[in-house]
Image 1 (cartoon, rainbow, N blue to C red):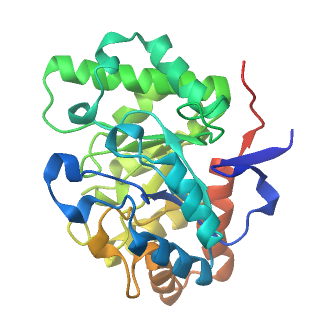
Image 2 (cartoon, one colour):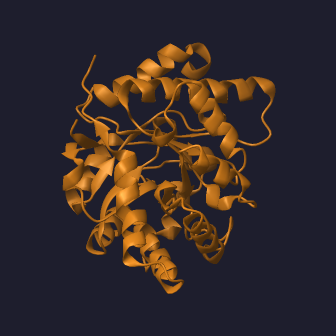
Length: 311
């Protein structure tokens, strides 16, 4: 079966995608309405357009906007950003964290939640021709009561159903890299394939234990908060990544920078942050083949699906 990557501009043969592919970014997030912080508002931002254009010039070919609709996904604006920059954009479906869930998460059962996600992947978002290509980012928060924990697990099981029906990959959000393997187990138990799962933010973890358990199970780990020293230094991320490579798991690593704030745009940062990180990897001895695998081969394999149609 010929593989495609489902972008906001349509299905692109996977072989036609070139350059660096970033699997965990945001270009249309809107958390201003919850935090009254304009730094968390990327929607309708000329700074985003300029930064994506600069990323294109620096070799970025595709960006996955892992913004679910409950935190401001704007599929029509994603189309505009893609057309104005020449960078392929992939949109997402799903539900982020319990504090942002719409009421339907509590009211609908898992099959109906899965139907909603499948509809956005196979038919279109909000009646448009724009289709999602990824499920995510779906997450667990810290310190949840039993009822909220049950809702999180419900969303994960529904996401696994939707992935199984469409082949779409799943991107998760962990809190400080915690409980990543537990997330994977819920998804696998619900029928998702390991190679369709990226457990996100594992570069924030204080121990390598869960990273090894995840890659040994055949799923991907996200070294995807590059450039965010609050969680870990990039030097630590380099050491974590190269340890996994030395252990034989280079094909199970996905790198990205989780841009979600205006203050991270511009300069030599923004959606070009990964370029600086790959230079750090090269300085530690990573060769061109490994860098190509991390920035292109791995994300392309993760994002590629068989052509999926309605019904």
